[in-house]
Picture 1 (cartoon, rainbow, N blue to C red):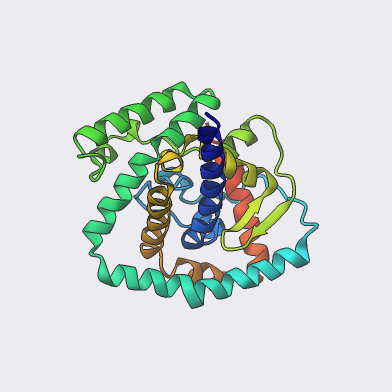
Picture 2: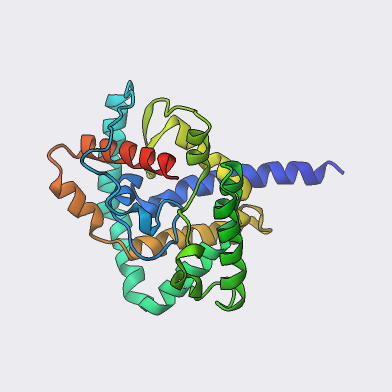
Length: 261
């Protein structure tokens, strides 16, 4: 009778580790904050994310007491991207045709619907929750398990993506300190907690055997990066001080996500 709880605890710990490691291929949320496209696969991407930072938007700052450590991790992530992540994604893109990659992207976004539904509920956004539920049913049926995305043609079925870090912000919890995580990139103490919280709503976290869920998550991340090769370079080249630009871009983007109606 004791085997089941222990197994669940081990599985959950492993899942958290894999979710962190899979950030390798979603490289730098600061890049995601600036670039968006018409695919809603990742939690921080939706059509409303474009031009997230308006000139007249109030700006906020976050304490960075770990600056030296964060700077070192930033440099590590930069080299990791050019030496490992980019070549892997380029190879994946060369081998797998675009239509196949897009179908895989659609499927995994559909599979992640519980994250968006759960956080819509926690934020009290019942209309968005209903839209996400309708989108899930529509794409699962008419989109053949979500491999196609017919719901994208209907704006009311495409509410802004939501995550638990955003939910915590809506509850009034501050950013805490700024962090640059190895492999994952810019974050805050609140958003780190949010990543852990989203595991509760992540279906792949409870797949048995766990290796299947890990493979899907890592595959999703590699696949997503294959659509975004070159974006990190563009942002970095445009920045006078890349570290500060990524930090500011991430913080302002997350504020915009929290403040959206």
